[in-house]
Length: 430
Image 1 (cartoon, rainbow, N blue to C red):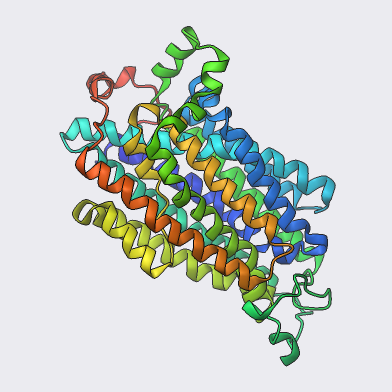
Image 2: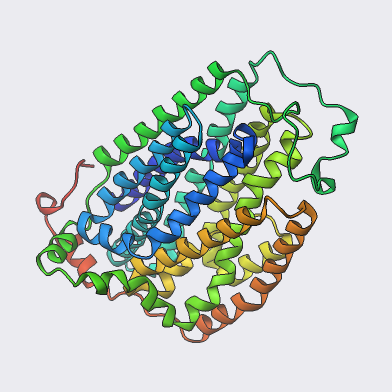
């Protein structure tokens, strides 16, 4: 029999897998599918600008009032709204739904990170293990399952768009403008970025809406409400709004979080380059929009496998060795989520909100200059931020090595473990 906490990790992972099968596929296609007047990239910019706004106050409020489980469900509903906006893409449909998605994005990820951290602490207390080791393992399992969403979402887009009978033949002249050699900033309408047949677009978006709704159903029915007691106590002894609102910013007084900002922003820079520039200028331009899915499938598959392997390897090598390994490869830097949960165990909601806020700022900056900078200069900016990260991150890692942060004492978790099953708030029984 698997443990209750491990079951919950699987439920969260499968829910996010289903949700981001839809959103990940749409995000990869925005710069190509809705290229007119830069509408697709603009919608992505609005999404991450809204995430910055929501990171300032929504995660602590929603998690402490609704609990992690129902915050996740509400955040997923915000993501599904963006899929509905893509049924009839336009400025009046994409921008409002982008705002809704952004407002729900930060609470969704903060609640997920908080939930996995609580589950890891509970399981560590139960098995008398080190909490960081169990948390790392749970995050590794989550990202192994979650990152595979890029495979399924992009497979759907490639198979459906591959049925288009009007696929444009790419000329040698156009190939000369693809990749880093392109500084036209826009691609003509008769190129391979032209939209597929409208019926195929509706079919794809309809499939994405379906798997998004499935994600909400999975979490609502099968995920245990493990922080029900804490949520009830918060409602009964509610903190002043200004105290909760400022929780994210108060954490900025900690120099460790300030030192992690370049690493977190680089994650945003890199992912925005992948979804906004790489797919358009390297894949769509040279191969066609129907190949975007196949290329991103390879990225998602390698990302998924590495998340699982390195999540387990971290207990033997430590975080530092893995980070530096990826720095020098400059491939896929593992999101430093586990690191935020370990460094700030008593302020998990505010810590993860900061992570989403600074990562989203990286997205917004990258999308903002994407319309007026040549691709060559965007690559230089990526390299500069990466080098800055290589300077600042080791400071935090060295301090943590010399002065390890104490995990939560586990008192609440041990009490929860000792409770009779009839007193455990959950939706399903193992």
